[in-house]
Amino acid sequence: MTDPKEHLIDWLRNAYAMEKQAESMLKAQASRLEHYPMLKGRIEQHLDETLSQQKLLEGCLDRLGSGPSTIKDLTARISAMGQAVGGMMVSDEVVKGGMAGYVFEHFEIASYTALIAAAKSVGDTETQRCCETILPQEVEMARWLLEHMPEVVTAYLERSAAGEEAKR
Ligand SMILES: [Fe+2]
Image 1 (tube, rainbow, N blue to C red):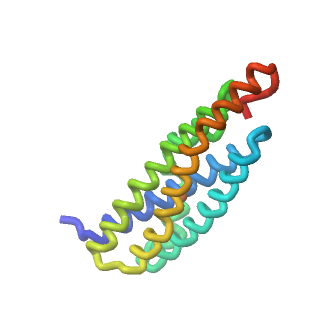
Image 2 (image 1 turned 45 degrees about the vertical axis):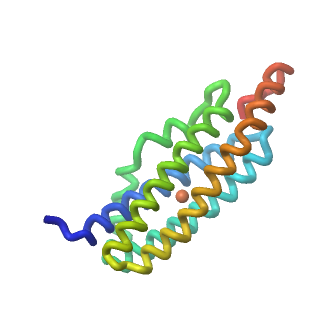
């Protein structure tokens, strides 16, 4: 038998690791993009949001008695998922990166949806409130990436056909 609060803490720690991963992916993408200023700008905006999300999660973990020392260990638990994306230097990286970003945002959406239910279940209104602040930011980023996918692809194909650098 495990206390529901233990699961909540575990999932919060996973979410924190996920946001660390998001940070490194977004940083890598933003620093490499050159010819897609709108995409770069939106990624930089979400990077700021991601750093704020980390702070909110840190606050929740602190409050639940799972402080910075355990947070430190989390860097080791980061999944390989985003790493392949952040350092991607394939010939169509802007397109592949956009798709991978969209997938990652949905992983985040699922994670915060689960966390909100868990926080409700435990009666932790502060964690619930934090996750309800974060969730719409992930939904909006996913929506933006999907909405702008066609224009990124079109711009990529045009640059590529014209013999210009297209991949980033
Ligand atoms: Fe996030």
